[in-house]
Image (cartoon, rainbow, N blue to C red; front, side, top):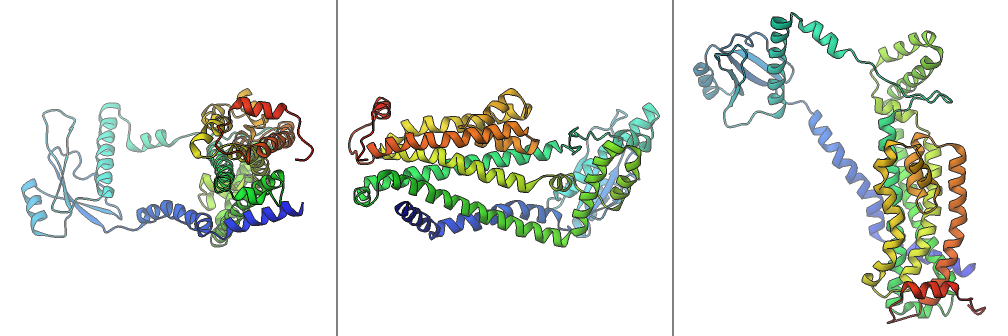
Length: 448
């Protein structure tokens, strides 16, 4: 055991001390957050107010454009006059010209500008108002429907809340889909990337003949277990730092927007109580909604049991990683280069890849037969179960999945250990699948 701990310490400290580890752990998440945050910040900045002259030869639009904080509309007598004003003065940014047509419904409009192209805000606002004004005129003249009546009809919507009959909690399907995909992707990438690190580390030591010196002091099984556990601890450290970083960010957001989080919790409780108490809870929910508009994303995040998700994520990462990393270590022990390793690593990764590719089918039925079996089979359960967790998984399925994964791990360790012991000191010989089955069926010597 002492020798295994020494190998674990070496593998762990060697990788923790690398600058690439800290770059990947701290800098990359910050850059990814910046990639999403910067465009949102730039889009939310107040723009310089634009002035657009309106030349309407149809008589339908002239007095109907509504100015806003971003765009001001001014009526102009003729197109020639407006063009002259646009050329001579910097106070105007563009001209919207609607020419008269023989038909009663205009079909074209032209946006003139000088040197500086109008912003997307201006173009979008002009197009939106043209469509709205034209639609309102058609509705009133042809169907005798006023704009207020139309807005009332189009804005009247029913929001469906998917509630669990046992817990009474709202489903928030969209949020669960996104969260499930993120969790499945994270655990897929974690198992695959850290497992590949184990294989590459074994191959490097074997190619450099360092392993010949190492096995003089430790047994092959101790070396394999030390490498697998050591690199696994690196992954856990990385996830722990990400969780801490995310926790600090959420605490900061919560501290600066405490009322918004409290409002989200009240609104979520109001929806849940409305489903069970009916009219008795209606006033409470309406009062919470009247205080402040809470984004559905925030309301959904408040309802998620993050401690449960984090705990299950750590379990499935640990067991899934140990299962696959031991097999990756065996693959590295029987090959001398990346090319030869493909014939062994590809079959190992097929279950994970297949599960990831079947996520759209699982999304259609998160509790269906396909999703259930994939979340129970040990080689596919880490990805499948993490995708299903946000949707809610029956206790017996989660328990059976965890039990089978726990039982499959020692079997894979035994298979990997047999292959690792026999292949770690082999050089120049191309190992086949027939050789592997022969090794597994051959009785182990006591000296190993």
